[in-house]
Image 1 (cartoon, rainbow, N blue to C red):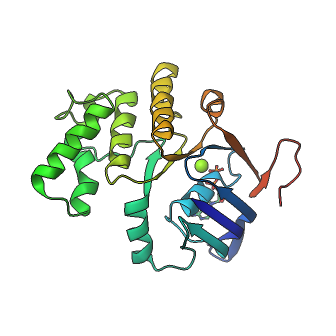
Image 2: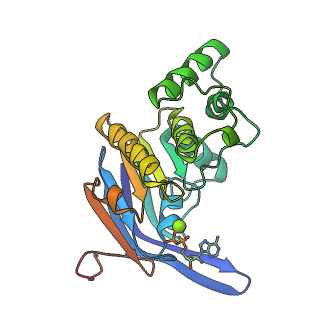
Length: 227
Ligand SMILES: Nc1ncnc2c1ncn2[C@@H]1O[C@H](COP(=O)(O)OP(=O)(O)O)[C@@H](O)[C@H]1O
Ligand SMILES: [Mg+2]
């Protein structure tokens, strides 16, 4: 699913270059459930943005489902992203003035899906995550846990194989967080590859494998960098 070799990411801010990731060699297989952990500023979100083709590496090779994506144009990246990756963020990132239905419908509109098929797909997605009775509600009329479930339904709209989540339970109470974890577990069990950045020990305990980042590098448990 994901193959990264000697990935480096440098951010340039004014005259200052900051190396956010280096020496990243990483392989994630189809249908793995992976946790990414590490202190704040260690490069977790940077790595996830690269994985999801939201950004490109400064150096190195990245193959997503066998496709070389490290040197694509922004339009090519968008195409890959829209069909292969579903994103879930800590702050939900829903459109505030759009209903539950419209938030989930949006990626299907972008993908050009026709009216009746689109409507039934949205309803199927919202039933699947238990929000079939909240179609008309705006995000402000939902709980945090419900907003995150809408975001998950939206992420699943175009049937991506890969689900990337950046601290998805960071803004949720324990009970809502547990519901979200259960959904990720189900996604994994139904064949998705799931990669979750988390500080939540509860999520980490569900993962098959944990990737530890420190100072922009991958470290294993005993602190030695993995080549
Ligand atoms: N767009 C950016 N421009 C400049 N520096 C950035 C940018 N994004 C992240 N950084 C820096 O890169 C480092 C890693 O950031 P990030 O990947 O967000 O870490 P984490 O998600 O582990 O907290 C931090 O020092 C951060 O300040
Ligand atoms: Mg982050």
